[in-house]
Length: 579
Image 1 (cartoon, rainbow, N blue to C red):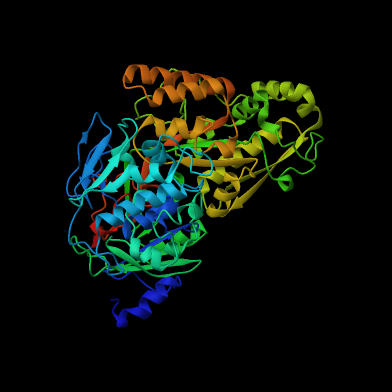
Image 2: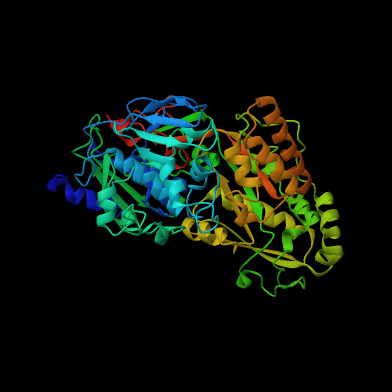
């Protein structure tokens, strides 16, 4: 329980009091720019949600230290080996584990978890890649009639020995990594049913197919086996406390407060006062110019960047309100505005990549040839890349739509995540260069809350957004299929489809030979360079800042596969303490 004598202090922290000199020794305060979309693991598919979920819930195993390839067991007792030619995985589960509700963790909870993920498998979630492994399709039962209860029930089950058994239709070398994703955290079956969630039975499963559970009762009242449990949540803050019944080592940090502070300057000031231990600190420029070298500040630099970011050009915009006139008449754009490859190339040549590297990444960044981390197998340095070239941009704008774009002009509405300085700067660079080419070109920029932008873009409503991808699992497929396949997660946001690329990506998914697989990925990258479905944003060397009294968070503990790596320090809260 939280000490009542400390409650006033914690309440002040929740409200962002400026009077506090420093956070208490047993309390961790984190400040981020935007909201947390969900606390339901089944719906989790963003770094903001992952940052919280991975501390309330636990997966069967997780990444070892800063490794992207090695795992350590969590709710499993060991990392299992595949049998039956890679199609069967039998997992021994940890005993004497309690959920925060008080319920005992059993194999039935694990079975329920993965069946719920397969049954719902909504577009908002990352369960498409679980379904692809276990059912042979990324779709749910509404979208693919071959998905039946019998298939779902047979894909994951508990045997007589209380072991969890996965049965795959074909071998999947990325399956272990997929289960380390926080969206595959184990749920409390009894608690979920008591809250009115799916009861786990065949009788009711069809009612839950494709259901969006972002705002579920489990999101409101989570119950995991993890070291922290929810105390309170509102629009601006989340308060958690250490779970007294946690099976593992008791954490030194007893209370965690996650505050939504949209203004970067306010987060910086709070951090410098010692009122926050970790903050979403903005770009490298923000960190080096405003925080580095200040008293009480530690900068951890030289970290791997396993994210990729692109500016999306939606080829089938499904929101008339964002189109203006809906015509190429200088007062708006048609819904298929970005369907012309010449137009997309013009936008790619309009982005000043070197300026972005200098202004946002402080010179510590590089262009990418494809939307894949350059440390991943399959990355090809030999693929062509766009440069800032106003003359080429003008030439392609003049070709687009038979010359109508250049003659009539356009008004384009583009969005970025509120509070993200890097995203805002990238869009401002693009806007400035495009508008400088032709006085009839107009780009309107709008900052949107993370959850709003995710949902609107998923529905195809956003004409242009900037958004990144942090890996769910360390494999090229997780990026290239996501961005470039018409069956990929980001397809509804871009609506770019190339039948040849789809064929290459599908072949790569079943190709065991690494050389052949990498060749297919090079072909995808070259085709994408030709067609320019995205503006490829340069990526920098990762870094984070923390207060100097925070212990347990270093380059050696930083794992880019954790949700907290994008916003904060890439280290589980339970491993932190203060001196």
